Image (tube, rainbow over all chains, first blue to last red; front, side, top):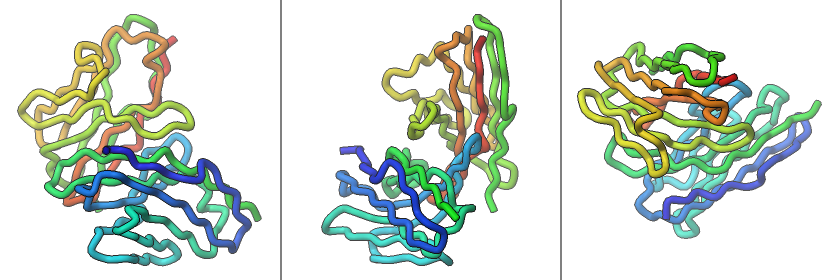
Length: 113
Length: 113
């Protein structure tokens, strides 16, 4: 019930291309879905997040698409850049503050010139 | 924005000794902080939830006597790895909840030799 499944495990995209990472969850009580970016040796940094009352959220080159009925959400990185090369984690948590965050397994993105 | 400062960033200790890791919220009060452990190329594993002024809540399988957590103030939580052994070598990360925006520290790389 607490799992968040993430795919692919790794992704290689050419500079300027679109990177797409997918996640699926099981627990319908989740109501906050953030994406984190992590560089080697650093802690995760919040990239963008969405709540289930909207189907899409865009911030710059990053877009989250959310499908509540399918219990799936995805991250799209438009015009991918070498600086985007990092590990990306989707996550989910429940409403109510101070709730545990359940993380996906991570996707290592490599953007090649 | 919300900043969580974590120190040290890297520590090497001898087997059998104890190591303390500090996590401070710099510009906000954090009633609750979370401690994670991350193995290479893996996702974050929640170890415990640290609550100011009360005992920490540990996840199943985490030894509370080995990983001592103290949350003495609204801006400081500490994780002490007691009698460290090589298998405790890992990347430890803290995070604090800020109105649904979980902010992470930069992590501590612990190596036990």
